[in-house]
Image (cartoon, rainbow, N blue to C red):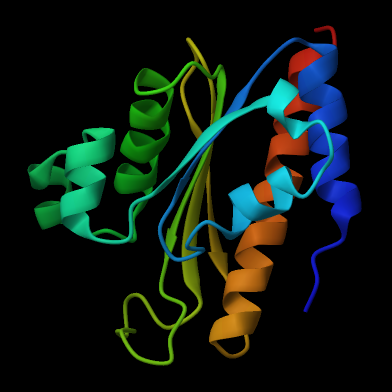
Length: 166
């Protein structure tokens, strides 16, 4: 599967037009969002860095996710992706963050959080994170692909909202 590079190109156009930089905080996507971004020529002008925080320890050490958050809500939760996005902004020179954590499968799902459960967060510096719970279908590759596409689409939506006058 190949993600339409149009999403990543549009992300770059919005960020460059607003002189903003992006940071990614990824768990289940394993750096795939950052890969799509860096596939765009010239992305160094608007992409600061990416954090791949697959383990809970990495989420805590690299992004400042609190152990209490992970213990109470789990890695795949709204609370965790909010802290991942905020931590990514704090630990980078970016003004826009995207964070993702999910259960890609084929194992790891529970009745409360089945395989395909993915939480995403997008945050502009100085604002509260926006979050979305997604329930994706398919195998591991399909879940991860859909999570990357949703992450990129969410950045576009965030940028469009930020540039639309009230």
